[in-house]
Length: 447
Image (cartoon, rainbow, N blue to C red; front, side, top):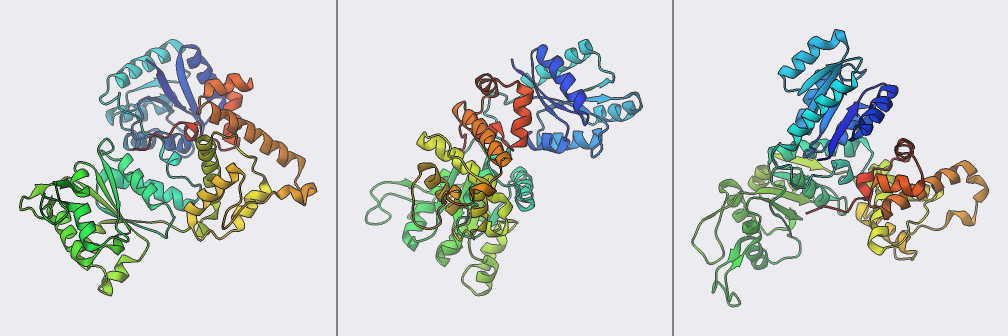
């Protein structure tokens, strides 16, 4: 079995020395000096051992244990403690830590305890299920707003409550809906999406509830509707503000009673679903005007997520665009195009009326080297080249080389290290400098 360790200590010398020792013993080690960064990379399905210092400037051992247990409950936590911190370490064990080890570390004792913890992880339930990618690789953005959205998604996914997702067209409401499903206990069940916009009352009713054979002229056989298809999983209703009032009444009954009736049928069919509804309009305002049923709005609005337009979170543009360029390069099997600082500035000056969807389209055209309608990047080197400093060009070249290698190896660090003839420590340091996450280059596991 692979023995994966997340090592957290605020002293870089400790991280480097312990990592080197453990890797020689056959462990796969991810080392961190910032506990918050380490926490972000622990997914809900993470199955590994966390070796963590008890006393760090921002978090103590008990706070770290609590955070890990909430974020990645299948991980086993071993705490490293100085003599004065042993009472805290013992208290942590009462609260669920696997073990603690006193500093200075003895290699034989450490390897023995880590191996035992790793075997417990191996025997933990559901270890064979596909592990979720870190939420940062699904919900992209470095702004405070997107960090808040990610935290809200993880919290709501655990509760399984019906939720409204508000945002302008193209802000990524379906991405958020899929993340709510992916990080929930329903992730192995169906995620069923339906766009309520542009459908007549009869069509959307049949799409949602299904119909019995002979219920109307063209109903030659029984048809299962979207709600029934989503049983056990998640139903995503996009553009719910467009749903006809008569259908809203029937949907309200489904949400309240968790049963459906197919069109033309009399049988009550129980359904176990979480309902996620997305709207580009203010449903509260629509309900006050009588254009959306207020009882349905209040029943759905147990929780809500509000996505800002891209023009109000421009600090996310660079990370999103680079993410889309990587995706487009993989999709079209091309080498990643060089992106210069002046082009990033050009991206940030645009108002993005089409939001993230428009940005993705620009990235596709950028990779393909074609000009399309709307905003397009133009080569910044046709003028003002002298202002583009040598150091900036070298930094950009280094990032492009790393990105290309990560794309071609699907994020396999060992292969990248060999291909570029870089020691793993140097490679990790350069990836951190350029904010490159290996998980973003692995094949998508979206369901």
